[in-house]
Amino acid sequence: VKPVPVIDVALVHHPVRDRRGETITTAINNVDVHDIARSCRTYGVRVFHVVTPITAQQAIAERILVHWREGEGATRLPERGDALDRVRIAASIEDVVAGMTAELGERPTTIVTSAAPPTDRVWLGHSDAAARLRIEGVTLLVLGNGHGLTDDVMQGADEVLAPIVGVDGYNHLSVRAAAAILLDRLLRRDA
Ligand code: SAM
Image (cartoon, rainbow, N blue to C red; front, side):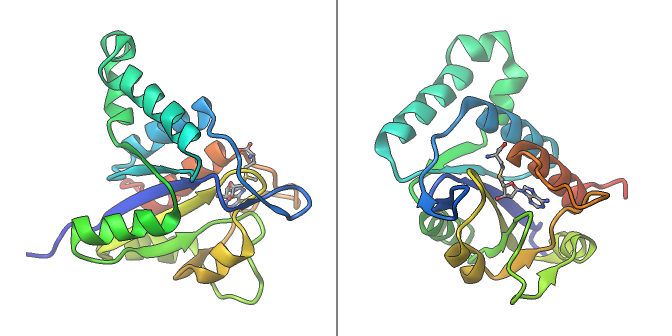
């Protein structure tokens, strides 16, 4: 039996770039976790991985999740708990890939995203990506916080997704908005 294609999403807080292009670690923010978790749940993403190497940050994220899974949040807004049930915390992209490989028996195809992907790599178009996700085995879609993923991460990925393009070159979407747009383009069923 053909296994159902699986897609996970990762929001990376390190390594990401700052406005000067330096590599930094950004703080997890509650809005990103909630907003992207709801988008992921809507489009059938298996797991939304929140990536940070900072243990104090991991603890903060864990506390958010517990509150919404079992705590007062879960009783007040069970559907939010349903979305956050699919959130996991990881220390690195490598850990996410290793975990998925162990759990799913197949190494994920990593697809990185950016408003300005490297021009020395071929970009995967959105409709091509959508078609592949309908048949492909296991995929990890990687989003960056801060000013985006570092060049190492972009170069190390299996695929570089073409950017979402606006109408006149202005291109400063939040990672939350970009996640929602990309998930719709790649996973919508009514297209
Ligand atoms: N930290 C700010 C925030 O969240 O409001 C800015 C988001 S950050 C610049 C960039 C991330 O959002 C990228 O790593 C990518 O995942 C996503 N992103 C932003 N614009 C995009 C675009 N035009 N196409 C594809 N992905 C985009």
